[in-house]
Image (cartoon, rainbow, N blue to C red; front, side):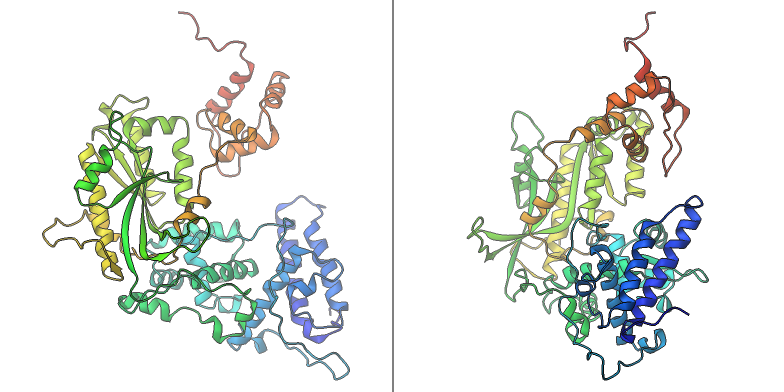
Length: 553
């Protein structure tokens, strides 16, 4: 029998710490070599010893951090355990989870729950995982939280999870959720899976992540009474923090200044990146063609994408020093990346194609459009790679990345497609909020079939355009280490995971060159895929050959 705690009210916390020690011990025995020391287990054991000796009731991570052997990382773990205890008690599970003996009269009485539940964050320990808003992991955490799957006893099956995600607005298929769950379980450790039946629940780290995501979600403005029934149902299903004891754990914040007010008028504006043009001799041709098509557009410098849409309210003005008197602007969930066929081929060769797709996927916008401009017969285009390779890249972009790929042969088709998107956004916005843009005429042709899935035009989380620009602006200059990895990625069939593995062993090109010139081999294995012999030979020849001149005939 394990020793009793000095304060019986800390018994639940001690039991959860023992579970953490058992879980990490099992991982060490399964993955590591015999005799390997796990320093995390040692830290947990020191923390458990301090918790058992502490005479007072531990009610927050900040209080636990004052004990011997408990730092910021373990304090955050304790904070998540206490959150789960309160959630279980709210749903009538505290009695079944633990039998806590009431403290005696000579002990210090239990204090009310502290409002400073959240431990201070520092650079020590791993960072808390917080997925981008509107992406698959975000829907998974939100659905598990609203289904109260916060303990192993309240785990839910994958189909019920997918169904609840659809109710929250998720538009993906079930197989996409299965692929996403693998990363959340094995890589981020925010979702747990029961061994016997495979049901899912939030881990301690998952509760922390869901709490942070939920706080941002509830600070978003609410749509007015003209919203359809689906939006009203979503708001009714929202977790009411003010009616529970969990509300005291949320740090006090200023009321959201983006809250909607009845009577607000909005203007939908298409923003074009200043580098987008049709003719070098007349850079305003693109903008003029869109204006002639009754599309409200402006040219600006965009941090990500080539076209995005914003909602601007002339009746809502900024009060800050920098933008005082200017209308507030919020980003809508549509971004377009435009490329002609030759640029697409060049970006695939120099790996900008992969980097741009990763940035578009991480920006948090719901609908990403990849617009390719050029002849429909890709093989006939004078490009540096074959047409079949271009077609394969576009297919992977549509299937694997879930982007909408549109292929137009002329500039006029591009303008027509952007016009159709703009009219569709305006039409959807008119159904929810007051929009000063002229509503589309009934005589206009129906939008292309892919746009029928663009149903969530009113943002779930209203993000100011200035904050969006700051968050996703491309880095002005690369570090030397990043340039080194980009150079290695030019080797055929060397992916990002393999290059990261090589750069960890050889942080500079000189170290790699010295290693190979000494007659030693280079291990190109990675944790995600195998590397062919051709790539290995190419890299070795790159470092060994005295000259790169082509052989004479």
